Picture 1 (tube, rainbow, N blue to C red):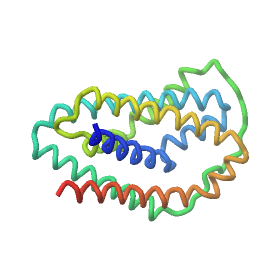
Picture 2 (tube, rainbow, N blue to C red):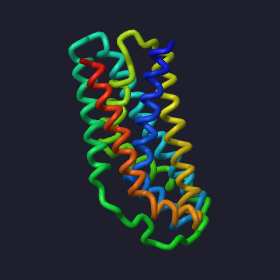
Picture 3 (tube, rainbow, N blue to C red):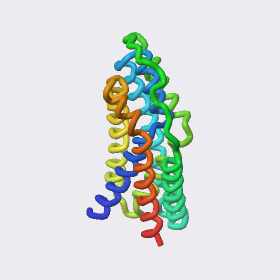
Picture 4 (cartoon, rainbow, N blue to C red):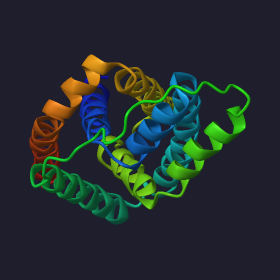
Length: 209
């Protein structure tokens, strides 16, 4: 059980660090929350989370099918680690940017639930980086003998993490003090995240050999 705990910690940490960096999903949430209010941001977040769930399940069953092939499995693990190093590099070399270029205009409209959900779902499902990312997550955290219920727990955790983090982002971007904090420290957070991903990716490659 200890080895599963170690794998879970690595997966959860890498996943959360990746969530910290503002990406396409963040700006979709920012846009909807700013234009239509907190409610639309939450529904958009739910759409994004379910799109991520699709990729999580595809990655889970994909890894399950090939994990008995040692060569392919190890190759994916190494490639996954290199991908984490690549993300880390992008975060470390990222420049400071203005996150909030528009003033929040609260226009609550609870009739457009499907519209908000669709915007979030489509933005995430059409982002090819999501499929690569989740395949990477499972390739570095699952061993040949990892039970399916443990793998399912990993998948459930990532879905819940995406959902709650995105909803948390909605509350941050609709609060003036939080916006100021994010604007000031977002680039520093990206640098720290990059270092953490470098450490995780490097340690996985080191332990593999």
